[in-house]
Image (cartoon, rainbow, N blue to C red):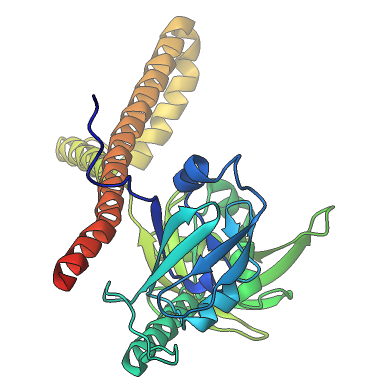
Length: 352
């Protein structure tokens, strides 16, 4: 005979942090949706209730989102950025919602249902700070020039950056390098067949020289900050993204080895690199027919093979670093998920 469990099966829970876009809608976690809702209650209206107020709220569910009616629930509970909401699935489409403040403690409400003043002030301050941070982040843009952009003097700007900052009209644009010098270039617009508009910086030689002054090579990224908008916007150089450590180390080793070889040969009385190169070019043209074709091919194949192996090694090392970072993020997420049951256990002990 199987003994009945002393405790009833736990009701499923999920929680979500309250972010800047959470006032208009809330996303249901993918795993919770697939295990408890998908194929059973899709496209229906959910009912929300809480201990703070006696009334209930009908909220429409569109896919994995809670939409129409969610805003009213948020306003009634005075929720803001930095808060958390914990959903307990009680039956069918009925959820009990517990609101937690930024201190991870349950939000306290007055008998009339309003949030305590100190909690509300803290929530408003957090939301104001979050909006300020988001606004500041839109002023920065990361660009990754290529060999082609250096040759053409044309560098595209992300649409997300140009639209939010009002950079949608052609004209002059000023770039400020790390030394404070100003570079006047053209801000131009390009439209595709679908009427999609793209903005780009144009300067035949100026763009490549600007990057060279800031020590940015093709394939490397630089960050610019918009410090002035209007008819003649101004972007200031902030920083460049360095190469991964293993690539930087390999490049430094190669440059050091090449420099040492030049010094040794120069000390022996050999001509400089440029002079030697010009002489070797003439000699190679005269003696090209004396060399076997296969020797040139073999040398080329060796260089290509070495380049491919080096690239593969770099990709594998980078992939390992990504796996490590991914595991660290998954561990952090699991720790966050464990906060809710620990909090509930502690609260239960305090009540007892």
